[in-house]
Length: 271
Image (cartoon, rainbow, N blue to C red; front, side):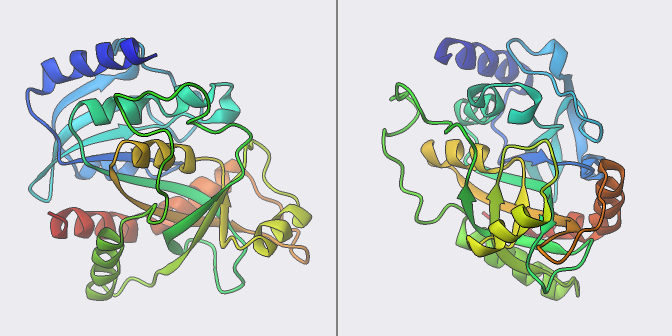
């Protein structure tokens, strides 16, 4: 695996010729952010050695390098999920590559189900912590000593500096936001009412099928992370609304202008 990571990083580095300031992973329906980037290079996943392929509607399949708010960014338009059949090392492969490219900061976004009673559909939640209930841990197995330590400090999974920059931006732009805990499950089924209730009982404010493995691997490598969720549906023991992937994408589109402003603010304000 390490040799493949190095091969992929070398391929990308030979094209970029410089080190991006941020890596950004876009979640379901959040692809409009790529239109804000002044692209310098666009690489199809299929053209990158060893790179996985995405199979989910709402996820592109391109690595876009360019500038945003005066900073150099490498943006993943389309992420990989455990539920697609990838093993967890494949899901987190791009984050390994980002580290070898010299990137120190990671921004992740996702669509999530809200279980906090204060949340509404299309709200934005800034992630301040997470709970990992994925069935496989991305650091299980022999440790890649070149990339990080065996045991990883997770006392600050999401950068307080970037979180504060996001809150400051939201206030300046009059964008209502919540803070909360994101709980990761395997998927691909949306949760039952009882499962939504379990998420809330365990301390989650929102639940989804991604993000946490990527953040764990980023922290293993010493990267700083910022994450946000768009609340695309609501659930709980007393809530039994039907939900579809199309509705998730519609809610994500509604929240997109605010998400773009917040991400831009985080990039602009974070040195």
